[in-house]
Amino acid sequence: MTASPSADRATFTSTIRLKLRQPARLRNLELLLVVFAIAIVLGAVALVQLGATGAIDASVLALVAVLGVLILGMHLTMRIVAPDADPLILPIITVLNGLGIAMIYRIDLADGASGWEAGGIRQIVWTAIAIVIAIGVLLVVRNHRVLQKYRFIAMFSGILLLLLPMLPLIGTEKNGARLWIEIGPFSFQPGELGKVALAIFFAGYLVTARDSLSMVGRKFLGMQLPRARDLGPILVVFAASMIVLVVQRDLGTALLYFGLFLVMLYVATGRSSWIILGLALFGTGAFVASRVLSYVGGRVDAWLDPFNPDNYDAIGGSYQLVQGLFGLANGGLIGTGLGRGRPDITPLAESDYIISALGEELGLVGLFAILGLYLLFVARGFRIGFAGQDDFGRLLGVGLAFVIALQVFVVIGGVTRVIPLTGLTTPFLAAGGSSLVANWIIAALLLRLSDSVRAQPLLVIDSGSEPNRLVVGQQ
Image (tube, rainbow, N blue to C red; front, side, top):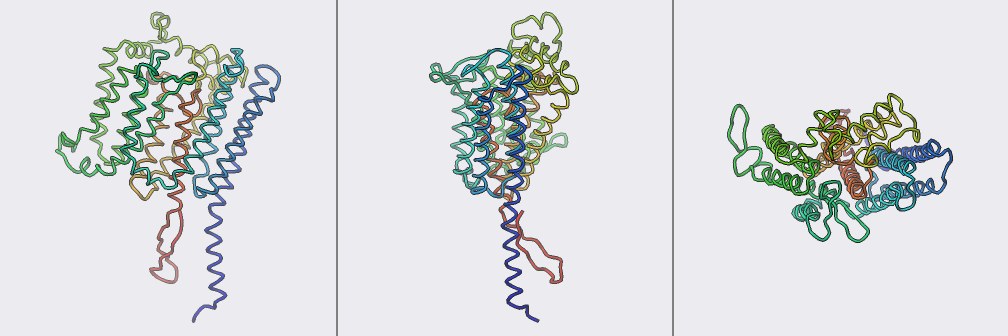
């Protein structure tokens, strides 16, 4: 018996309504969480002011509110150009970035800094620039697969950004590491953008080369080892990492680049032999560097025996590490309260040791909440990567999420003395414009990937009354 035309129209209309409401539901959830995140940030800044000075400065709150308007603008942009994007990423990075601004501002109050000399004001300005750039990425990159065509451009760009601090006129050295370029009054760390470019190149390269990297080779001790000529890429990245370590005196960036390529190589090929070879290479390089390079050896000595007076009093020794540990201990379980601690005692508390500063005033509970936000962000990134239906998108999503995960592990591991200090910055929290811009670009690319993944149609077999009927749905 044939269904009536009115029944067919009703079924068709209900189907269309479901497909239109799903993206709106995601964006409505994001809007609710973003408003809540902005309220948390404003409350944190107000608590810092009350705790440190006993009064509220409306001008700083107004600047933070402007950032909230920009974030809402990014949300509106996503409603138009990325309606299916993940609804949790933007609220998470809003809270992390806002807590970082609140803590940097708190250290400014302790140091008496104001105006452009205050790190908190500069962080607010850099955050605004980063949000605008992230919106631009969403508007320009409408399909992540386009990036695969520019993988070699990304490679040359990443290498160029990596080498820029070595140039004699614009390259500059700070705190013993040559990572910055200075043009007039502005300084920038180009290696932060280099990690994004190299992640795009690694994803594009491994999509085309993974067959030769995973299927060919000889077995040794139960492991299938790659051919000698296939070792070229990993040896090149290893050499680049060692150059960064030796010339730029930056252990953290060397570890980040090599770890990124190694993980993406394992995800592309599924061969544990790459991990074993990579760890053996990096372990050998790190051991030799600790014996040959004095600044690497000093960090290892400070890590192994920080309370030794020789290490504590040495230039570049364990003084910073010990003060950070004392700050965490002073915070205890629930912290001293925002604006009530002394995080300014620890050197570079606004950048390298911002986790120690937050741990002192928010306590172990606050640190666990921050780590929970990072865990959720990385988990969403991995989920976006593994849910992709194209190999380039999978590798890019996993690589970008792993960059954040590795940075968090290395930084917090160094502050808590799990591993030696490396000099990396905590994503979204630490002071630094180049790091903020790079991390917001990573977030924008993950949002674009998630929109592409959810927008892809799926074919599902309906097990209802009509056998073998295919239904087109959405993720």
